[in-house]
Image 1 (cartoon, one colour):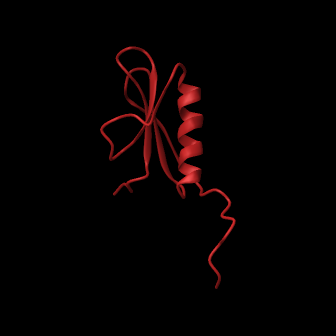
Image 2 (cartoon, helix red, strand yellow; image 1 turned 120 degrees about the horizontal axis):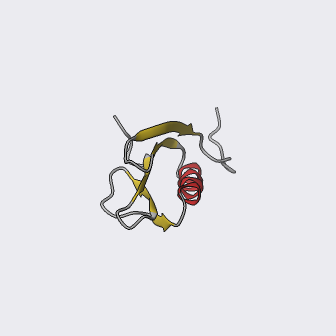
Image 3 (tube, helix red, strand yellow; image 1 turned 120 degrees about the vertical axis):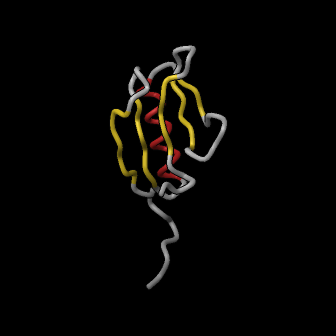
Amino acid sequence: MSKGRDRTVSRRPDGTWENKRNDAERASSVHETQKDAEQAAKRMLRNQGGGELTIKGVNGKFRSKATIAPGKDPYPPEG
């Protein structure tokens, strides 16, 4: 089951690439290249505590999946 913060990078009908949370209707960001969209998605996932990133290819089919670890927490829990 996917968490709300998991993201997918996919191509839009106009040829741009979107970075979108899996539980969202609208894209979080739109980019000219797949690489830019992927970098933005990774940055957002790290800032939001980590999660799964799914990348779809030009044809809209699954290309790869990665687990993104949370960014460094300046106030980690004790214990």
